[in-house]
Amino acid sequence: MAVLFAGFAAMGKKHRNRPSAPPGGTASASAPSGERSPWYTTLKIEQNGHFVYVTTIPIDELFDYCVVERRHENPIDGFQRRLNRARAEEIAEYLNTEGNSIPINIVLSAQPEAEFRHIRENKGLSFKRVPGAFVILDGQHRMWGYQMCAARHRIPVAIYEGLSRADEVRLFVDINTKHQGVPKALILDVKGLAGSETDEEKLLRELFDRLNTDAESPLCAKLSAAQASSGKLSRTAFNTALMRAIRGDSLRRVSSRDKQYELVLKFLKSFHDELEDKALLFKRHFFAAIFDLFDEIVKKAKKDHGSVTPASLQAIVHPICNLPEDRLPKTQKRESLVDVMRGMLNSDTSISDEDF
View 1 (cartoon, helix red, strand yellow):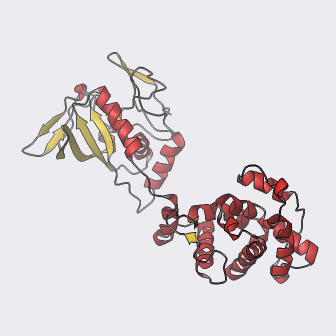
View 2 (view 1 turned 135 degrees about the vertical axis):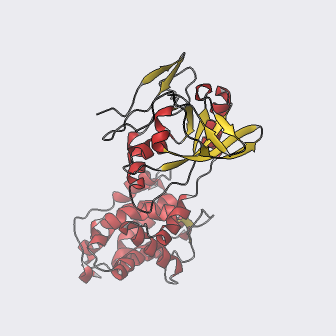
View 3 (view 1 turned 90 degrees about the horizontal axis):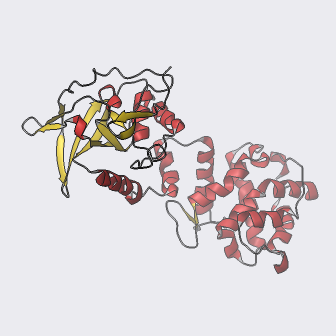
């Protein structure tokens, strides 16, 4: 079986990392090297003095003629990162699933050896099929993912012509620094609309939404769903904090969503009622720290008081909420807070629906 990384292939005086067969797959059934490609219908665009040709090309007619200039392999003028095999395999698996698509151009730079041609009259482009005809500026993992995919797709590409190496590197830097991703909180907020939530994400969304709208909740109107907001907890911070709690023994042993919500609500109210400075509850590190101890606090309430009620929970969190100043960590990091709080707790008891 051919290996994933082809190593160096000499191209004149330059070192090129040229693709071979993917792991578990076969090399593309491309035409013999040196022949010209067919004509591909193309849209020609001019941007600030550069010409870009947008088209689609079957992966088997393109893969073998693309190279990646990786920095660790070519320290003189390489600029790309290492190929992450796992990432490429994830893309291939995604593309193998019915209904999935990646409508994003792979960005290429045509090299002199490509003998790149564009005919304005028929709006087509053609190139000489030689290794190193194109340098991949953006999308090496997508390129590998397409090649490793069982289906043989046409892939969208944007091809630059006449770039110097400095131009290529500048584009690579711009693509990877000017792009701003969508906030994680917004992604979490809309995943339910796409029907792509995990069971854990669905539970976290339900808890978030109920706690943010329930008038009895200390977090009512104090949570921000899609973006960071001053004085509020973001969905990202909320999910990060509660993830350990929903994976813990206490919430997993509770049989219904309503009972799970009831337990989380009681837990939050016990802290809210005991804290002199209520604003602490909306501080990300403090919020995360108390939910790190969710299981321990709930189990200690049952062990010490026989049940998990608002009164028993409040009795357990009282010393945590009234820590003397000399016991507080010098830094307000989550780990430091957890260490101090945990020193007051010790329990190995489990709970069930009947306990509250």
